[in-house]
Length: 482
Image 1 (cartoon, one colour):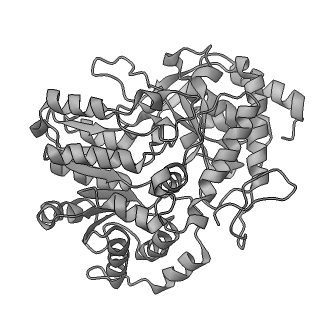
Image 2 (image 1 turned 135 degrees about the vertical axis):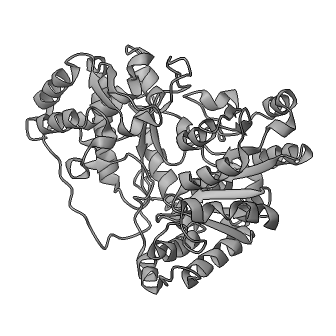
Image 3 (image 1 turned 180 degrees about the horizontal axis):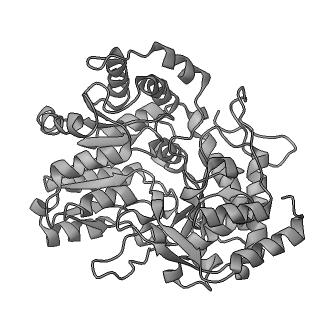
């Protein structure tokens, strides 16, 4: 029972939990939000959390823990080496994935660092369905390249294609032939494509990709950070999998891959990460990198309290009633915005609702970061913090020119078990107002631009006084206290 049906009321998502601990929220007036945005140099990452009403930046490390997860934290064994907590976590992962060897790490990008350091050499080509910012950065810093082979339909904004994260198999075969299998250290599948709308990958596509890789003796790597959402979509959208349990589907997926890594800030609802390695020799070839970069092999830079919570969180990630909540709330948000005519990525995927800034802000040149401008405008007009997922999140080409993103998106993440339906309705309302006043939004330009992952710490400023004019219009509509 992952969805409760209504007799008279229209169908809406239903929270399958009750609230036991609350955190007070503050909605600053719009003119104060403008001052905070200036202090943050028009980068939502630089805002203070206390100045935000609804934080939809990410679902990474901000999911609500269950009572059972919090209770498990009291069982933690804080030994530096040989912690029983580690062995309990390792055994739980082996139970779920059927893979014996675990390398712990403090989060997903730490796993990516270890994998890139171990496998990537100068001029190597790593094949992906689609890249994630940190996964790509770790590869390119070592002189490698990334080839994104997602199906063309995956980059179409409005669609009813159920698995827009699938890899194009013909492109895959062609790329292997052109690059040569010896120049491809591994093929990475992201089970829930973060940067193109949290769109899922079908089991059938994973199976075919892994079959091609095995034929060419190329390692396969699964990024399982968003796996719980992907599992929900496989069960509900893939006809052959509808009678399978979530645990059965998980094991079927795991059996395809040589290596699985994850950020437990997403998968497991806590803060940590890990790399599961099927082959013992391969495991030993990476284990020295954990003490070098992370910590000893039985904690890997993680808090043991978080590790105990993760162990319970892994079980909860196998529960359809738990993992259905995010996709259902996201679908509701996406469908309501679509009814209002707001350009959003359809169908609703995992992770969050995604606004199509390339359409909403079509009047802003791509070199002035339309998605970055839209995410700032949303904070000004509602106190909602989203995340830019467009050109601002890319890195420049070697010659200094902009590398324009395939899609210009604003992500409104739905951390698990955090937001209520009324808060979701507020978001929908404010996005609709902003869409109706979209012509007032202007561009941004850098005043301080880091070379790597510039979207985290870069500083920007507006290209005109558009923020002041937008706030003025907002206050005229809602008053000076909202």
